[in-house]
Amino acid sequence: MSTTTSQLLTIFNSLAMEKASMNITSQEQAFLDRNQLPSTYLDIANQWFFPLVKSISDNFNPNNAPKIIGINGCQGSGKSTLADYLCTIVADRLGVTTVSLSLDDFYLTKAERIDLGSTVHPLLETRGVPGTHDVQLAMDCIQSLVKGQKTVITRFDKSIDDRASFDSLETIEGKVGLIVLEGWCLGAKPEPLEQLTQPINSLEEQDDRDGIWRNYVNNAIQSDYQALFNLADELIMLQAPSFDTVFHWRLEQEQKMIKRLEKEGMDNRSGVMNEQQIRRFINYFQRVTENILSEMPSRADHLFKLGKTRQITNYSQPSAN
Picture 1 (cartoon, rainbow, N blue to C red):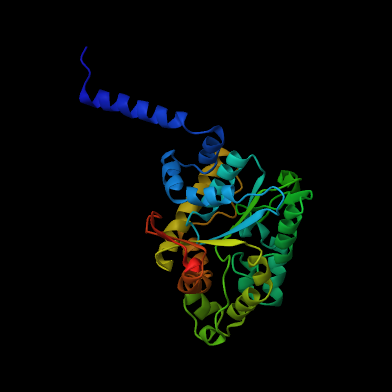
Picture 2: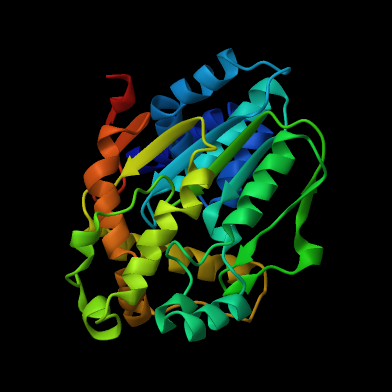
C-alpha cells in the first residue's frame, strides 16, 4: 500500500514533535501544562529570555540574599508566564527554591474594598488600581522569604473576587534563591498633579468628576508603593504597542481562566467578566498604564517590545545606557 504525501507529512510532524518533547524536561512540561502553552513557547522563551536565566545563574551566590526580579506589563502581556518561566528554569538549573509572586495576589479583601469604596470613593471597591492592594502584606511576604522564614504565600482568587481560602495556600520555608514579583503597575511612577485635572475616559468623566479617585490612586503610587517597588533588584518591562491592545489581551485572559475553572470542575464564576464588563474594567487602568508606557521604557533594566499578537519585536537594556 502506497504512502501519500499527506501521510508522510503527518508522520514527519509526529516524529518532529516527539523529538522536541524528548528534549523537554519534566519541569518544563509542567510549566507548559500550567500555562496551557504549546512546546513552541520554549523555543521563543529560550531565544529571548534565556540570557536572563543565564545571568541570574552565573551571578548566583548561595550565601547572598535571593535576587528579586520585578516584571511590569499591562494585562495579558505575558508577565505571569514569564515569571513562571524564570522561576522554573532557574530552579531546574540551580536546584534552588524559586518563588513567583503576583501583585494581584495582594489585593485587599472584598470586605476591605467595600469599606474603602464607602469611605473614600465608590470606584475603589473594584480591585486593580494602586490603593486596592495590601502593600504591607506584600512587603512582609517578600521580606519573610528573603530571611528564609516560614512564609504563607497569599493568593487571590479572581473567580470569586476575593482572597483564596487559607487551607489552599502554599507555605514555603528555608533558603530561597530567586523571587519574581510581577504586576501591571509594578514600578509605576506618580503623574504630575496638573495631569490629573482632566478625565481621560468615560469612567473618569462620569464616575470621578471631582477627581477624588484618580488623586487617591496617584497618592498611593507616590507613597506606599515606591517602597515595595524598590525591593526589586532589576525591572523587566513587557511593553505593549499601546493601551488599545489591552482589551483583546484581557479578554483572552478571561477565556483562559474559564477553561481552567472548567478543568478543575469549579462552578462558581461570580468573578468572571463578559466582554462589556471587561471594556469598563480596563478603563480603571488606562491612566496609570498610559503613564507607564510613556515613561518606563527609558529606565527599565530589560525592555521587551511586543507586537499586537504579543510577539517580541525588540530587546534592549535602557538603564545600562
